[in-house]
Image (cartoon, rainbow, N blue to C red):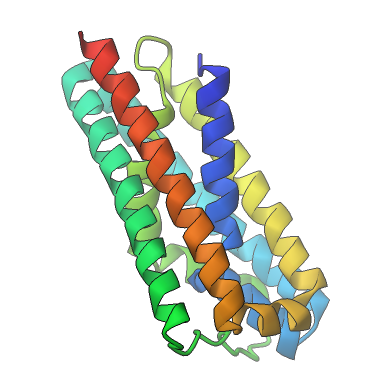
Length: 213
């Protein structure tokens, strides 16, 4: 099964990823600010249904890969750690842009009468979601144990954290919208997230190297 330190690192990475506003969170924030808490909560349900589908597809594919080609799964884990480090560098660069006074991204407006459908479409129409999930899961999985249960556990944790943080966005929509538009706030948030991501990626790579000896 998953080592406790890896599970804690996954929770930290997933929580920080959900905390930084991406397309889905900005959509939820926009719904909360302009339409109210109830439509935003319905849109959130649609987004999480889309994420469940992405995680199921990723778990099936990665589980098969780990069973049939263990070396390929290890290489994928290394690639995932490097991807995580790249996300950290990207966050640090974003912090630099905020320090330079680059304008923040505004929450996406939306007034559709079908927030559940809209949320699902937002999640499922973003292929980067699947790429991110496929890259994120392998570094935290121990291929020496049953892989699919580990992937299911990680997926359940990620979706639960994402939903919990999204509910915070909904509850404090207007205040969070102003805070995330503040370059100073975004600079500190992005810097912290970037450093944490890089540190976790380096730890994963070190553990993979030691395991291979």
